Image (cartoon, rainbow, N blue to C red):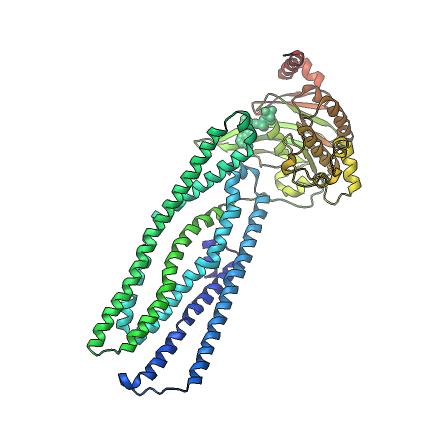
Length: 585
Ligand SMILES: Nc1ncnc2c1ncn2[C@@H]1O[C@H](COP(=O)(O)OP(=O)(O)OP(=O)(O)O)[C@@H](O)[C@H]1O
């Protein structure tokens, strides 16, 4: 049973055990609702014995009061157990599920995130988890509990009088069959609704992220029309999903009511032929109300469980992703990074062949040297630098650091040795001090300030109202591009790792700041393995080794002088940039 729930609902072992407990608790609660019916039947039978024939003995009033109190206490205890077992443990499980998804995402290769959009993942973590939480605190335990309770109570009723029980319960399997029979239809409508919700979240998120570009291009009206359309579609799909579910659930619930009618008819007939007395029929009628209320709810819950399964499948998809693993605590003798016949593709083509963006790339970035990657746009420079940090795993060939294949090193362990500065700087809505400290957790304020000074951050930090304690807004929205880039460089200086990847690290800086920051960087890079990407050729002219990448392969390599003398692609690029430097408006 536990294993079934683990597989079916992507639960942890503890979560599945708690669910079994919750179902047992729900069953007991529903069964306990029958105790007052039994008591009422006994009292009525005793009181009415003189009129309906029989020799029932009326007990003293206090006995009935004591029994009533005991029944109330028992119901209260079962309800309390049910509450603890459903609510408390389902929230705990839901929190664990969110943490385990976040943990998983830490280890999933970036290729996964390239295929999924952000709103899809946000929906899975926030909305799906919340939906699943409700399913475990309400739908699933109540559904299984109601079904089990009806089976047990049904057996009791059959033993009491099989004819009345059959007249009452014949509708139950048909009602469930109607709800289950509509599953395909409901799944289809729920899927359309879920997709429309994702599109809605996507379009709102895109609108917020690109609001500046939309306004700059005077496209607000056109764009809002598009957002409006997704909102309207989502509303339509929502209504369709609700109507689809309602058709099947309401039909099934209506049929349950027919069971009460057939019970009355069968009961009346049995009374007239003297097979049962009126009290027995009355007890069945009260029992029917007790059984059918949870049953009607169970039919609704069954439809909700179908909808939850779509959410669970999305969660399972994340949970089943292959994660990047490897050795921890690796000691490196040196930090040479070696690309050996590397082939890499982000995506597959339509015919399922890989769409290679790097082909047979081989070069060495030696420790103590600056290796520059240059080449035309789209040639594969950023891809190479990201592969060097194992953001993705290569499809063919290998990349080694200090002789060890990086695909055998645990990604977080590997990245401990890297300081990376990208052109697209990511900053957090926190103080400048903490944004820089991200480079090395545990660094003292003095060390952070020293790194900031080296990265030429001091002059703009001093002008801020709270200096280093100024909060810089979401992704550093209150800072200029150059300031953001300097913070990112300060982070790298603070980390002081043996491998440094600089992807257009100084592109947003003005000439004065660029030369100052480069001075700081040149102090940082001593005796390190440095991989630099820069479009400004003069920035990399002094590099020890230049690798020219074009069309996903190494076109040529050497020093600046060697490549100029060779008269190849590098020479051409150099000439083009020298000419464009002379160009004026
Ligand atoms: N995340 C991605 N998913 C799919 N394709 C990608 C992705 N990133 C880059 N590419 C493709 O890989 C190829 C190499 O891109 P890359 O960014 O490495 O080139 P680059 O030389 O750094 O370009 P640039 O100088 O313009 O920054 C390009 O064709 C690009 O479209």
